[in-house]
Length: 293
Ligand SMILES: C[S@@+](CC[C@H](N)C(=O)[O-])C[C@H]1O[C@@H](n2cnc3c(N)ncnc32)[C@H](O)[C@@H]1O
Image (cartoon, rainbow, N blue to C red; front, side, top):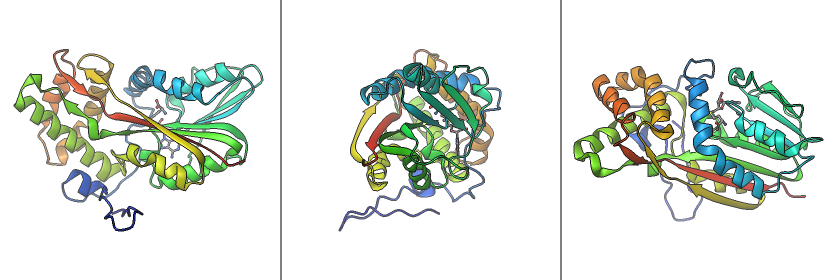
């Protein structure tokens, strides 16, 4: 079980270790990333994440001044939508390296300024002091050692380069009460079981967003800043559909956790396809900082 300290004198650390944060018996950690990109549902899931999140990401990156000639590293690039956008911004003489454990979904990407590389951010070699920008979205929460991942990304920055990380924090995720208390309670219990499975079996931290700004400062970055985004997602729309694809893929593991039944997971999958169902999305926390010159 991982341990945490608040680092604030006189204040007890909030215990966000997987089992305690989500309840249930400890489950042995069997791996990290839960949704391998070679899976049949992943292209759609990554496309939906891009549809839901790219606009906010592009706003943050544009505000940092990404421009022609920059050298950028996109870590855990997934479907590559952010890498492709960056390649367009830094062209014609800039460069974007898009890395991922599994680059299957980036196969179709083709841009003269873009290189796609299979790469594990925790273990594979990475050039040091080379990039004007390093960006990672929805990656750190999956890493067995997120601080080590962040340290490696920070080391890849040129002096004065910017690191931006974006992670979800599921605290905000909550159903609109319109469907009634029973449906809301069911949704909440299935989401709780989802957290338990991902935290227990995949070392995923559903509350990673809240620690990003502190982690960037601790990694030695300066001029740090952060921003949170959340909205209302709807059944049958991209937000509902992404939850359907998530729950379909985790259905067996969630059921095996014993926290909810298969029928209950199926009911929530159905709710997430129903346009009458709305829910507050998980928050996306973006945090950025600069390597000292
Ligand atoms: C939730 S997806 C996010 C994809 C993309 N960044 C986005 O926001 O749409 C997480 C991605 O991180 C990749 N990943 C997980 N662990 C990794 C590691 N150790 N090194 C590199 N990539 C990793 C996964 O393969 C997956 O593509």
